[in-house]
Length: 381
Image (cartoon, rainbow, N blue to C red):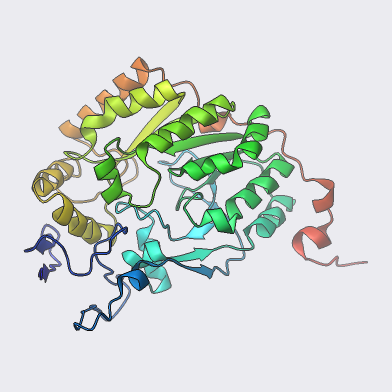
């Protein structure tokens, strides 16, 4: 059995003496289910030999209702090209080990590890809440990003249909939407997306992190395969939907050598713009990432981290605005230059999210009655 060693030192990493961590679950990105930083106790699952740690039970996804009373989030970060976002789920079944949303599960008293991938909170009432917020007299139309935190087309959306219901609301209001996803499931809503595209109300950013099936399988275990994502770019383009490719994250010594090929194939599939983000390791992600990296790519783990630190001022992570997405230094400039040259070579600089139509927004008549749209009674009747 492998032994786990955990250190609090900023430059000390989780090491494994065996080939497989005893709590690793097939089909999940995180190796362990370590508790969040707000918990007072550390819990360790140990198999007593009686089969008490059932593999099926550990890997089964559980969906719970989220009690949120608002669904439009505001963003003030200058690093992000949108001001408003909509996320139908907390947690994401795709299980991307690098996901920057993982630490949010710690605020719920859950683990940013396997819990984040397995215990999903669905905003069942999201469409109605979105109607209410868009109907408010104080609302000023801006592009709303779908999937800024977790993927709106993760596998459970097949049954939940929350994203589709929200898109139907946006179509009724002429509300522009920018979708970010790595799920081919986006094509299920091709009918709505095609109609919105005709009115310049939608664009889609497809995340293509790697073209290596093995790397994608371990790093993004339940997301669509790289080829299916390219298929989504091609099919969306055929519907008239403007598509961008998002290579996020770029990881030195792991997928950075694929920049030119990812952009080239995406452009051939029909993408019109592109962007990237350097690997970020805030909060609990750092230890979860190191567990994963040491288990799956131990031969290059030191090289990955040493190169990353050279772009973060010697640290694993730099949270400063303007630096956290791209890094700085020689390697960061090299990645930036390669990306810029490829963008120019393949013509991936033709469209931005801000070009969607925000002037056609209007509240449909059925939502203009304040009693119906907000539940608030008139002061005088």
